[in-house]
Length: 167
Image 1 (tube, helix red, strand yellow):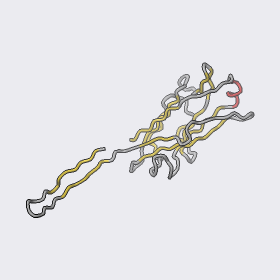
Image 2 (image 1 turned 45 degrees about the vertical axis):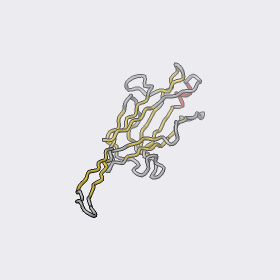
Image 3 (image 1 turned 90 degrees about the horizontal axis):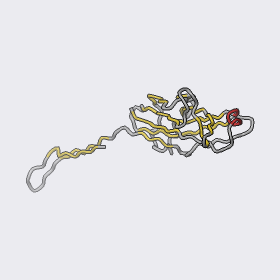
Image 4 (image 1 turned 60 degrees about the horizontal axis):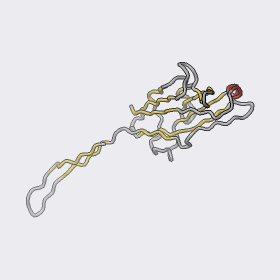
């Protein structure tokens, strides 16, 4: 942010004097990402896949919203493979889908490190935490029942790094 104050018109010497001054402030493009529900917890139920959808907030103050969103799971064994949650040396594959909060797909089945969804135009422009105006995006995390049942018991986790950049 930059601000400037410049004397526009100086007054003249006398019993009273008037002058004008301009006050300006340049506000940059700002974006903010927040996850109101913190971590995404999955549960197992016999006979079904484990699926959780979590909404999150992308805020932008841009007059014409335009940002890129980078989704980068930490544990991706190789190019073209699903990300995995780990429990020690054990791995459990999962599917990660990025969607708008209304369920419209942005990037389905993220299978590579560093998947970028460019030129996104949906963001909350009311509240940087989406306290009003609602969340703008969501992740759907799916772990197939067959993968769960073939996994060694343990507590599995992964970290998904998400970066938004104003264009």
